Length: 331
Ligand code: UDP
Ligand code: MG
Image (cartoon, rainbow, N blue to C red; front, side):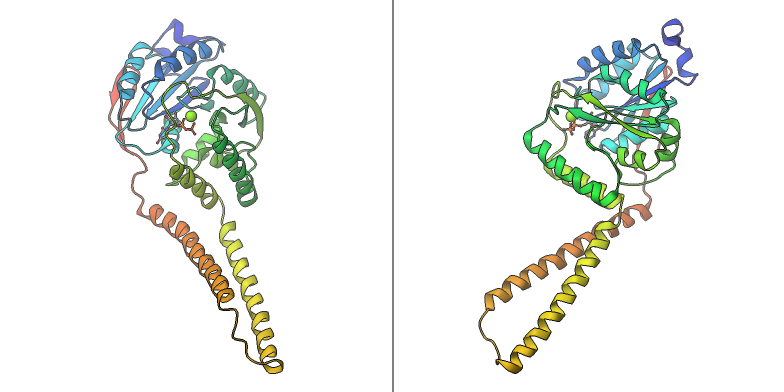
């Protein structure tokens, strides 16, 4: 395998590279220099042709300027997509996929939590014929709360969606061209890329990768956005929650019927009952809670349908830096 970007900088932008690296960047100014310092040597060492696509997800710090500089430093293998707002990590990855030309696409985070030195392992696995290489983080370096909550959500998600991912949160993954083409043909407003990719995989596999602490800056996910992300995952890939809910409705209706029958008989043989007001409150609150939950759940699906039918652009690209020229573009 030749490393053509070294011999002729112009070539690799016109010929498809073997590997495309897709990296979403949101307010990562503090860590980008370290990322470049490890990522490029790690890829050069692979002996594969490659391109790196950075997507600036509307950063409000110097990230965009730093990416521009990096593009000028390595225009042979670097491409930069600049969003004109913050559309989220998964939209950024989707934009990267639409521009990626490689045979194997690798996603990773910009904060160095996914060591770039692990990319070789994923490429090797993909070369064995697996079109989806998932990963499991060994000794995950996140807060205990994140680790336990993520384990619990993982288990629930597996029940609901039947998507088998041991570690759904790890973004360091490899996707074959067939999967990325399939993802590109989807126009989902809210999505979760690893799950979407998995649903199209012919031969998925999982490997273990190292995980590090965030190199600089802090997590871009608040508790609220993590909850939202999990909702997207559950309701975006399955209608099982709705089915469970109708099933619960049937069970509660059946139990209430039995209970009413019991009360009628009790009234006939023992007489009317007066106590138990608070028991009634308890039961009523439980049922009201269930009902509100059901409406909310329904709302999740209706909201998705609404977003989807409005068909607004999922993200707006302000500029694409590649091959020495900037192209304006909208999608
Ligand atoms: N990110 C993004 N847009 C966002 C939030 C995050 O592009 O709205 C990027 C971020 O720059 C990083 C990756 O997504 O490269 C993962 O984010 P982060 O490390 O904050 O998430 P965590 O590791 O805490 O799950
Ligand atoms: Mg991170």
